[in-house]
Length: 308
Image 1 (cartoon, rainbow, N blue to C red):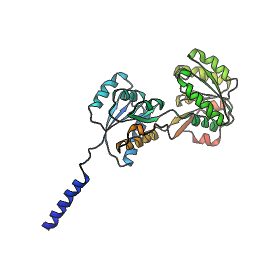
Image 2: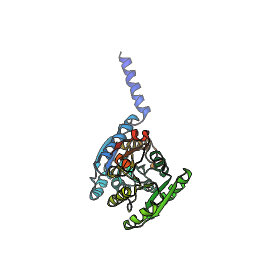
Image 3: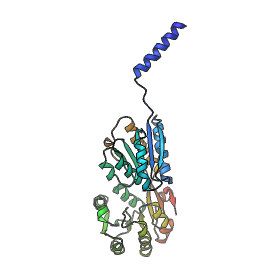
């Protein structure tokens, strides 16, 4: 018995030596721009995905509360926290981390575009902006009779996007009727010009054209001219746009979790290409459809995340 116990102890000791030093638990700083529902859903998806991968890091949650003045102090705390990885959600948290922290890997979610992700070597993530071909394909699904799509945009913000969309539209048998503006005062006249040919207005995310201040004017134009709007967010669909596309925030969190898993296993962030959402949801405004006497496909009516 004594000999057997001694052998067991030796085998156990050798197993520890052969396995090398125990790896310290991974520590992740989760920095959110606010505690709104999409951020909570994304955090849930992130945590669930890492758990499914067999990873059980410890987390510290830091909420900026939509207050830019809290960003610098939060980043100083992160620098001193001994974290393995930073997970940011929202532009406020991501911009602050990218600016202040250069020696830790950062995975970001719920930011508008992938452009900024490519400029920071320790940063990757999932942007909210859907590829233009995906957005155009949804216009075809929801309003198959629409062959000419009107879009008003500020070229300083969206020139490359609209050029890419025009090429994609041509391949899909669609026509993009475009008007450039550089101030909100130019929007009404630009809308009137595109509406002469377009069967739907595509509301791209644009701080000049589709700002909250312009939403009322554009939706009023839509009603007066019986031309539906594809809105840039669910708030537009609620207010009177025919529909809006949205992301599955939990799924975005899971996408970020997959990236984080790769980083925790040794990959450098710059080797992980930024992504766009893998799952698309949409909301419909049935009142707008009835008012404009539009017939929507049954599968579209049944598949909506929300209807108004």
